[in-house]
Image 1: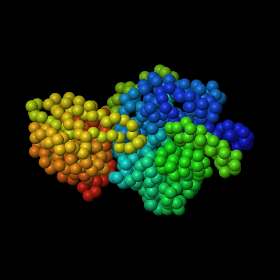
Image 2: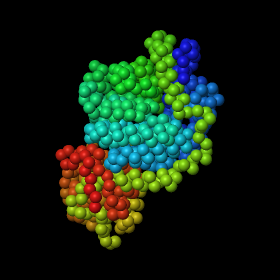
Image 3: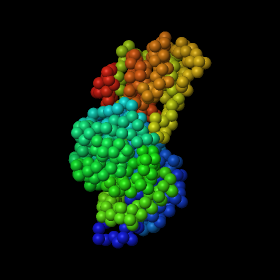
Image 4: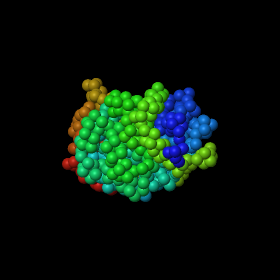
Amino acid sequence: MVERAALSAADLRDQLGQLLMAGFEGTDPSPAILDLIENHRLGGVILFSRNIESAEQVYRLTSTLQAKARAAGHRYPLLIAIDQENGMVQRLGEHVTLFPGNMALGASDSPELVTAVAGATGRELQALGINMNLAPVLDINNNPANPVIGVRSFGEDPEQVARLGLAAVRGYRQAGIISCLKHFPGHGDTATDSHLALPLISHDLARLERLELVPFARVLQEEGADCVMTAHIAFPALTGDPALPATVAPAIISGLLRQRLGFDGVAMSDCLEMEATATTLGIEEATVRALEAGLDLILISHRYDRQLAGLAAMRSALDEGRLSPNRLHQALTRLQRLKARYLSWEQLPRPEGLRLLKQPEHLALQRQSYRRAITLLRNDAGLLPLRLAPEQRLLIVLPQKEGASRVEDQRYPVEALVAAVRSYHPKTEARLLTLPLSEREHQSLREAVAQAQLVLLVTVNAYLDRAQSQYINWLVTEAPCPLVALAVYNPYDLLACPQITTYLLTYEYTRPAIEAAVAVLFGDAQPQGHLPVSLPPLHARGEGLSF
């Protein structure tokens, strides 16, 4: 622990790098990240998919980063963090066991399952040398138009989100992984992506305490938290300023999080290079104001020049008296207390730990957790499970889609979906559509549908996509054969086409989710999930059918 009397002004300047977590390009340590570690005493590193090539490579990478920090005289190992939320936001791909994201787990509504998934995720991260997971998301998804949270949330009910959030924190803690609650004080009720602009939530404190704050308050009260990440969202009812992100707002960090909720752990920013802060304040000003507001760890994920600018801004603010020595001592103390609890040079992972990855126990948990998530919401005509004769033609129709938000960086498993269906019914054709359809493409699709005995309509956030919504409504209305709709992302697509009569939900477009859904389609598994959000006025939260 850093004692306030122990650091001179020069020592304090030397330790300012501990208050920064930085990212870098490449699968080997870049000169930039090595400079930050060796010459600026960098506190932490964040990894993205751009840094991932294989499990063995990630282990070598984290080991090298830690060796450089140790050789440079760091008292504790680096924080090495990643966004491995599971589901649609996960950086490690198939190099580790894939597990369901929050909304899929919300559909199973099992705290025991959530703890098991978090524990298994944590153990695999530990084996790779990653000691911090920027999860769980505790945002409540009470706005269907939210472009950045959605299925990253456990659902719309604050009690359920709190219950499952607690379970996740316990699982990570059992695995010895530092977890981080996000995005305080709540990113759920907005239709703006903070990667692109500054969202604004107009609710007052009374409303936040009834809804958005419930999961954060419950976890802090019952389990405690290692770290809390703030949201780049304006809350003018709390701050008086519609242009002030929560990340730099003393009323939210020092007032709400520290004083009202009593949190004395590490509070960190989301990436300051996101447009919500980068264009409104700039990196230097955002860095200083975040520390002034009460944050302890500044995340700058991408550019080396901006990382250096953030460090220079810290030094200048200290020299000019804008950042007091006491405030910086406080931040350093919290960070070193966290590191002392979880990290030591004597307990870094060893290469034999890689055997933990994809172990049979974890793969069994993967299968169980995904199958428990699949939700059958409508089966009006009794089409499911499918009973197709071998000679009958099944047509899969699906849109060509990119990631729903910048936080997501994986390819959708189109080939896996088609292969999974063909494994049950070989006479399957697939049409991948680029929307909006040209007249020629429309006619070609019409002819393919006319030759099919069943259409499997795959929807990907159609309720937010006018072109997709239009062709879905046409297809559902005009198809001469039975049609099954499979929503492979957010569950709200039924709102875009309420006349759909057979509707199955996966909550994420990932390979194991697709395989679980196809098993349900063909009766190889029972649908077990229940809707964790409402689809007003069509369906209430908690609905779900079985065969």
